[in-house]
Image (cartoon, rainbow, N blue to C red; front, side, top):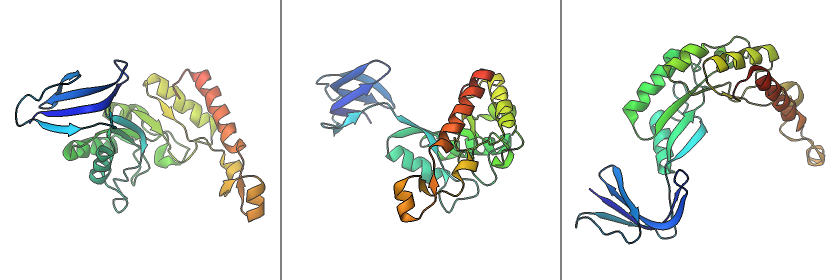
Length: 230
């Protein structure tokens, strides 16, 4: 069935379009974009989009789909359904699952499951280190071949600078970006809020901005040293 989306604000960064237009979809393809488009047949479904934005599918580069291991929180099916409902047609999922996505077998599983589920496209992010423990590098090359689009230890920083340097070197070799969690845990400790007057008044342990700034500075220096994408 054809679909005619009428009167929406069409935004397409690729073509530089930002205008109030109609969009005609024939089957699963956009066939026309323009003003005052006519329905192709009596069966053409019409969506009045006045006041709404019509744009290419959004991409979420940091999602937690929890499968495998934490399906009581989220599954690929529920996560990808939620993504599509919110206008996201592609998502990158973090590796903090159980087992951790630190080897090609888990990546293959995620890619295969996502194909079964359909909905949004899935782009797995592999771990930097085995078990997200920050000590031994994961199988970065094999993960890349299996389908990972980036590597990250997600909510954990790689505290060992030598390990991070090696990870960036491998990332350059395999042409894969590194997503860094910037937190010096020696500074953040068990802080629960921003360090400052309010934390003191509330009697809560603070987390100084320097905990993030130190790691940002280190990782930028290592990225420059290795020529990697960070």
